[in-house]
Image: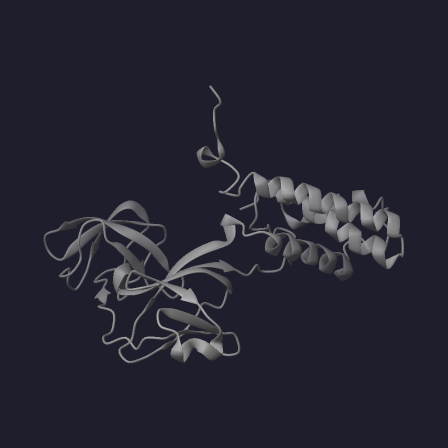
Length: 271
């Protein structure tokens, strides 16, 4: 996540536009709207790993339809009880084995198969704090194994983690990124629907708000906002220049994060 606040991003845009502080655009709702459009275009132009989320959905017996998270934008992958599923058109789901579909109108994921049984639930006996090796007391540990991926179905801070060890007295040890309340339920990932999806961004509003993209994208969104501002003034030359700067700089920033174009997998040596 970026560390540059909206107030600084606003100032950068005003410098690009060469505006005096007395200009009506400075600090206006229109300026914020332009920046948010630049943020959204930048966030959705590429599949940024910073926006990729892993979550689980517990299965219910004889139920094909499941509500997806409110911040869902588009799916990356789906597994059902560890079996990979591929997406199909909503109209084809009834006759498409091994598929899933997304109903945007109801915000639901729909499976072709009818689950024969529900996911096994494990309930936290006590409240637990975040930590790298937290001993979590459960109602039962039968069915859990060391190394299991688990989904903690917490309403406020859901997360995916792993069983490090199983101790006497129906307890497991695992890393927790956030605190959990007593009564929170967890499930084995291999017994659930597990989704990797790209989340929607939340628009900037407060002066202290930051964007969810890498630091180098912070000020790139200003070029798209400047493109919009100059376009309203019917200054096509400067509008096009800012749009080109946005596209070029954003592509460079993406290449620093795209797993298919960076890292060891893209390196070679000629000897």
